[in-house]
Image (cartoon, rainbow over all chains, first blue to last red; front, side):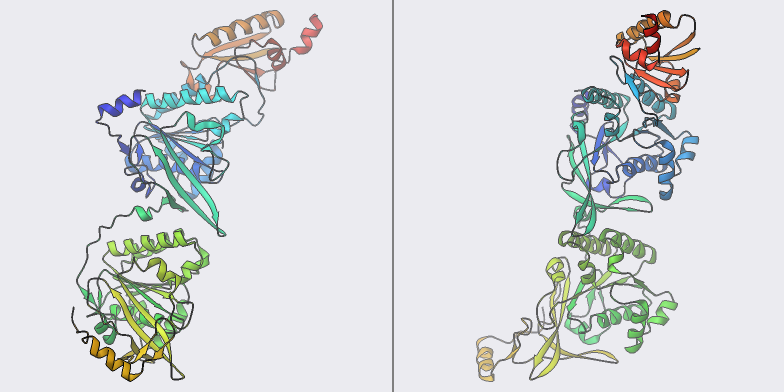
Length: 513
Length: 95
């Protein structure tokens, strides 16, 4: 009840403190509710312990807020060793009086005899003592479910844990209490633990979806405080947990009107003078119709102007890309030597989508390119599920746009003629410009056609133009005349009489906006 | 055989008072002067509770004779206390 009064006195708002978990403060709209316990529930292996410790370690390192870790499950020795790989040196934090570990892990000999009534006053006294000793403001308890197996009366354990949670509140510390659950979608936690820290509940999930592991975090409730709803993916990297707040990202990018060249004069003309400086372009086409060439030309043009360019290749190796570039007379090797070009190759299957995103973000942050290409997005789509792929593209595009960088993505269509790629369907609304490249079968000959399907905020050529590829690159020619059904994949000649009739019906489209 | 016992209590709570009374009675009856008992208040000396990894109070820890054994509760279940202190056979002798 005392929580309600604090809530009222502080004008109905619950203040929050930074959690030290990257991305979490965005989805929780500010972090963890200050001075209260928050329950973190998850199945075994859902990274509860890492979350609980990262919260403490980062609070010490980033905010100089000391912490207490109460372990019910693993021994302090195991914990110290397990988290070393994240670069967390618990031992030195303990030595410097910034962290205290309260060891409530089960005794190896185990057998405790119960002979009458008892309570957990000793545990409370130990936690309180540790909090006083290091002047802690943050406490993590991991995981309370483990203590139920040590005592016969689970009702009593629940009651005593409630006292512990109330005690933490009284001490004014902000705490995380972890608990086990048996199913990813089911009861909040085993033993009805949620009954005693019901105010704030976070759920960690580790789901197997289409043969891929997907970790998500969900804020189930935050009493009296706003937060983002639903599951957000997170990943565990060398630095610990990072939440990817994908759809929680804000659309705050400025829009640039500065044009940059595509590297191909004809394509520049079709786009009304080039791409916008901070736009996302999707180039879609069947295999062999010049997507990688478009990427190469675009990046080469950037490097020629002394700009840094970065390409993520998921289909071809570095050597293949360099060889192709030489074939088209583009100086990729030179740009790479001069530090103007960086080629990052990765197998789509080598990592989960979240980890690819982290890796790409790190590369972009450290290299600071002004042009980025991803060849191809479809390769990444193959290793993901629909929803997570869309979230990935949203996250990547907003990250790129926020840096006022141009991003050229390619997508591969399944059919050679016409048709759309699945990738397009997922992300076409996210991109600013879409370029379609298609094979056109005409009079027993394979031709190629290119068109700018959309370009936000700009005039663009609406016709489908024929183009050829030779050792100099792409040459865009005349529009296909008197041919219909190209994009549908069924090109047919329109008889001249009818064209004349149609031309008579409508005025010729004027060039200009 | 010398007994070394520690009883962890929480000040003057009813459970703690009962546990001390029950233990004194058992010791005087069965151990006479062959025991050392130290009573520790977890509120006054939490560091000792930390070292012995005490969760519940009251907790009776039998340090000697080995093995170390823990008995929790107000010790009102006399049979279980005797079992924990390995004094069961001695009752049979007395009876």
